[in-house]
Image (cartoon, rainbow over all chains, first blue to last red; front, top):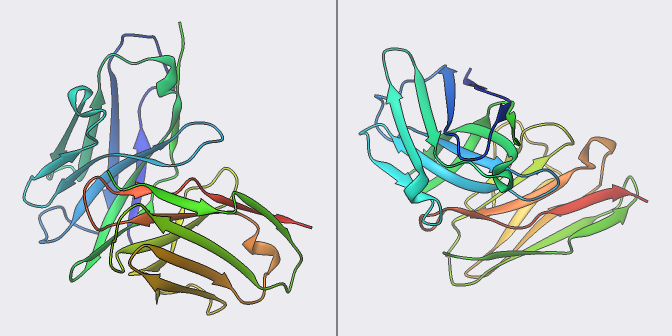
Length: 122
Length: 107
């Protein structure tokens, strides 16, 4: 059974850097095809993909946020870390980490962690 | 980026109703289309991948169809646990993008 869980601060100040950790079990990020992604959802709004790291350490970022995001993995700990710099109140959202599944050319996000609400406020 | 547009943004329906939600891509995405639903306060859950393949464990009342730019999610007989927000997502190209969501409410 695959599980993921996000951890990190619930409140950050504007201009600060946010660091979120995704701890997972039930799969290995060294297995071909596997990936872990981060997706966020502002209160009452839709989902926005942020970043994805693959088994081969290939990293992909949202073009609009690329300059502010870094995604890394620690395979020994089964963790993926997302950092986002220069936080702003508009970044207030629930942040989810998710397992990237695939079948041939097709991919999807499943399952998801429970999410962690991050509020940006002074 | 590929834009995903869902319609309607919300609908009201009764238990037992047949419900259809549509998703349109700004360019052809073949059948690289996934559907999720999300209950209040919970994480999204995958329902359908590759436009029409039912994820393991998902009830058969859910079905998906479409190819190219136009896609449909159908719930054949709405159940109380189906009242939620539904999202489509394209996996054709990076960045993966989501539709704005369709909220299914109780009539």
